[in-house]
Length: 205
Length: 205
Image 1 (cartoon, chains in turn brown, red):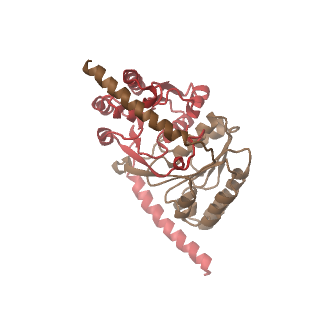
Image 2 (cartoon, chains in turn purple, red):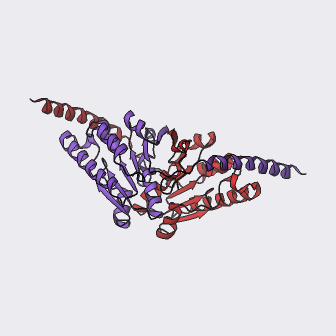
Image 3 (cartoon, chains in turn red, brown):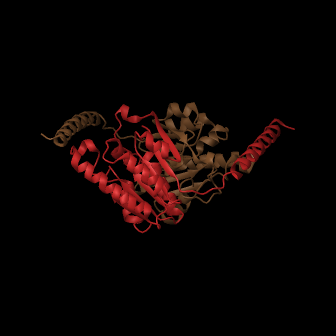
């Protein structure tokens, strides 16, 4: 047997074992369930992976909804594409008017957040909708514009069983992490802002 | 001054300071540059945030391309939507035939990875394309189906200056992390697989 043949044979054997172990593991995963998902941390990808899941849902013909809590007045690629191309497949709502240090008006921010949460509840309860993205809701929760206990209680007791809800934003509250089925921390390892690179179209918004 | 007015005044003062600090910081960020981005780690969101950025690019009218290195034979929401709805805006290529433990054929996996890398280079060099997603390329690099030095050398010396490239997958090699402008580690904090939940449409694929 040549060295290359030998390497291939060893590889095939190893992969066979991995596949068998994986098949056994996956056979135990049979349950379908609507998930409470949280994307938090100081890294990139919290919102964009939420929008990636929206894209997957649209691809599978699953009606979905987005409520954006904070980035209201920005022209974002995701807002443009959802409003212009997928108005039938995905409902898109904006509650916030920018990050809170832009508005500098607490009362208005609170009213916007409360309005967003009202819309969010309607969308989650709507039996037609299978996936709801609550983009940057963690910012509204962090500043106590929304009551964390009310949000967690609603998700745990009123969310329809098969509906997925994804909540994004830094500094997710411990109560939300406790209630969630799936939590991912997007951790910043290296970031070009420090080298004077501006937030850019496509990658950041 | 009532308590509420007092809280609002304090909030406005604090937000004013944050905004001033942020404006000063952002004023130093003026450079535009095509980024080498890496999404790695054991958590969710590596591929989906790549596809979220693809969505942003399409929303901004930036021509883009995807090369999927591993998930070739799956029916994924992102593949469906990109092929059926955005064939003009985003080129979509598949090189892999499933995860490597599914194929169990090292020679075929190597050939698929090499073919994917050939397509990837063409797309990155194409002056029309502004963003290239190399989905799950880290798996091909990890198994040495692709030479890490060749990939890093190409990205650092031949990638057009303004082109963004995003490389996803677990276990990113240290050489790639060193070369990247922006690295995010998606860290698993809590996952429903452990409770018997299967990978589900929309959220996982």
